Image (cartoon, rainbow over all chains, first blue to last red; front, top):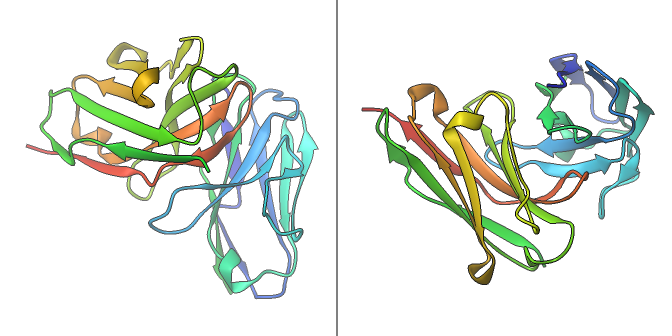
Length: 106
Length: 119
């Protein structure tokens, strides 16, 4: 099983600032990496797939990068609606998810 | 427009078998490449993938839960059914079904259904 590790567990950011979230895979997943946003009581929402491609309707302030085992989600100019939990998932071999990063208001 | 919705019991007793149904619209499980997966999330914890079934009846299971899971599809009813045997309180979670294409992420999700395991 490929283990996905996210850091930090919690990120305190002020509105308008930039948030940088990390996701590490225990072995290479090439670019088979997705990012999801999840708000309380809601299902996850796909933001980024193939490590860097924004899903339909996702604002340009969300960007993904990386390949192999190291990945980053960057959220520029954080808006109030962006405060949520973000989770990475590899779909290279049998899907696995990271533990999530909570982006909270500083 | 793709939609999915989970249904099943909200409360099961320890050792019982859980049966969940995912009813979907906007796509067909007879279309090449299409799949439906099940994912769960214990309260306050991370997402955990459980199982996947594809248009060609290819089935994949989480290695850690494989012995307890069965996934099936009814293409004519646009439904996917997940059964999980020998339920335990640690299986208390929100269970989601989601649309997937082979080697792709879960792009459409159901709203989830909370299943509590308690005597």
